[in-house]
Image 1 (cartoon, rainbow, N blue to C red):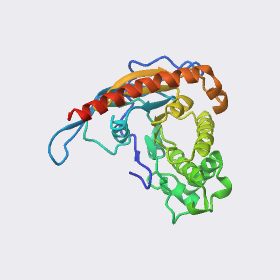
Image 2: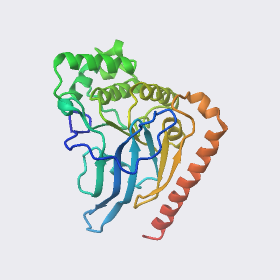
Image 3: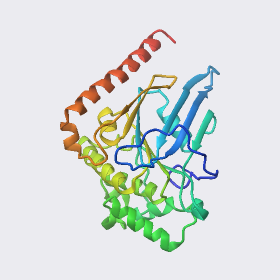
Image 4: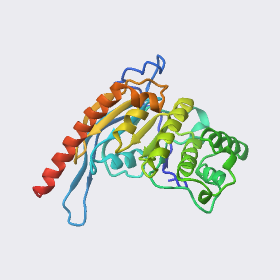
Length: 299
């Protein structure tokens, strides 16, 4: 973990791409796979020594430049999956093949993955620019390159005029923008987001959804996005993955048909949005219902 963001470095050579999926219509002819998850399994042993299976055979490919949203009932292993991808949990079976790689000494200048969490992760005793700078502390970038990244990514998230401000002087949405800038400044090959907008009020959340669409459009980030919000998943992602209740397995995947360039208001007015939201809600609700039935039955 580097500073206040979870991060992992690329250490291994590139793995040859296999079972690549068709590219998005706007992704160009060579939308290669960024990472493959193959049969991931995670079992926890709590104090009573009764095994709790969090993940059971999760296999998924994520394309470069693709945003994949993961939905599922509470306890389905979404956060466990993200922790594994972030390198924070290594006690799992299965394989993760990272097809993304660096050239030359770039491995010391970029992170393989960086994580934006749900809660406010800005350090209150540091200015906005120093919050971003601390995320670069584990990378081999000189002062000039660090300054370039700080200026660029704070400008990208609309905080260029607030770089000398402290977090308590910012709104909740602005603090989360600072956290996103800190992750982006590491120029990760895969951006991991664990319900990053969940703590925001409804109006700010809609604004931040549009901001994320703009940022991803400019950076072409590959992202894995965990959320409980079905509408948010459809708004932000190229593909939505629904997981079963515990143990977590992939129940279905749904391509999102709204294209790479989208506006929040226009997408929400699209009849397909409501249809997909309703269908995904039924799928998730079915898993929630089964989980409640198991709980009542003492399983």
